Length: 519
Image (tube, rainbow, N blue to C red; front, side, top):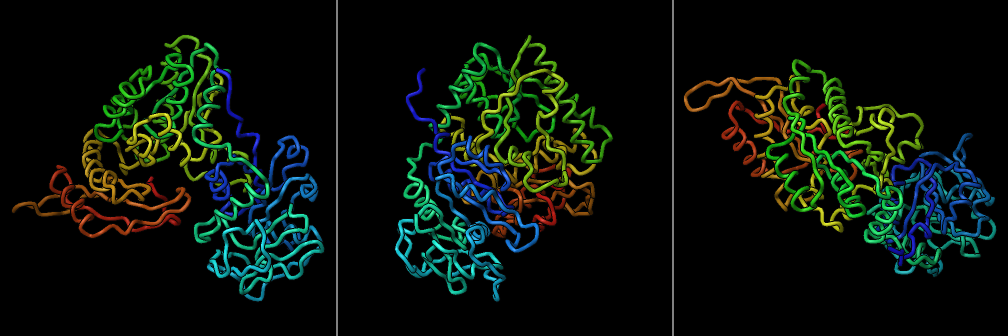
């Protein structure tokens, strides 16, 4: 099929990362505005930048002070590439200093909401009016503008809250347009993309699906591709996308590891076979997994045992499929960003369960069609491909399943107790439209028994902890302030309906310092 659309890669915006916690937010906002962008470390070399032919460059914020000895700086020649540049916060201070302006520590650190006052009309600020709120977070400020620059707007504490050079090719803002505390921020970014960089906006879920489909067809040809399905968002969307490209040449394997949620295997198989019409092999390995986990209490060991056994079963299935050359995986863009490692070496908090260990041993070529996308974009693409909502909209679920929510040993009986309790949490919270904003809600089985009274009898039974959090990206999370009637219903139902439980507790810790999962 000939491509009738233009490739959205032609409209690349390059984001250079100076370590801001908001860098990924800039990228997500730019993409929501229909423009494809990629994030790279601030010190990306000039030849690479040239070869990428970006249509605009955004310099992110960052925690450093531009006056520090080892302050991160990019190659000054990026201002001479002939493409518009936008500096955000630290990015503004960097460009002010690069052009000979003066930056110094502000007598008063500006953090939080500020009002913007327009000094000079400019298409960059179209739609913004005097007094509009912006979000500041900086301790340095531009004292003197470099020659050839003009002020577009100020705030109470910054004379130069928005600036540009006289040619209108280099812009800078002292505030953060990418955060939702700057209500007009998206409008300002849109002005930069469409009025300054003169882009058309070629990036959309539809354009992604069309391009990715063509690319997979070219790459795989008539070869078979094998894909491990977990029932999660990423693997489901990968499978739907590749199936759209190569049909039954995609062989999917869904392994039941014995620690799935209640009725999950049945629901997932029905969706894969009946709705998405995938060529699916179901492997019920529950017994093998429970046997391998017998007596194991340490969470890292549980993860590794489950990961290894999964790989072994998957390898057997791959061999049974003859000489399959391609392996499909649901790698997403944040994984790619992390592996380029902008922030230097970061400690492994827990080993991520992906099919990661496979390729080296199996001599297979990886197909990772989602590696350009963020999680929210994957969901949108999934809907575009007709993946059912209960797969696309589902909460993140750990690879090792309930094994890391059963603290201590995993046995058939303890899996049953948690499946029943978790099912009640899902019915009351996950499937309730009023709680759409919840990032994750689940039960944890604690290896402690407590005394209770049921009827006239004393009981000595298990405790279920309920964990419900709100989060944007799982990097940080806050415990959800659920209405008391909801907590009451969840607790009553679990105690009345789940044999072996006589107490429910609610986890009110945030991340950090606690993690979202208990193990």
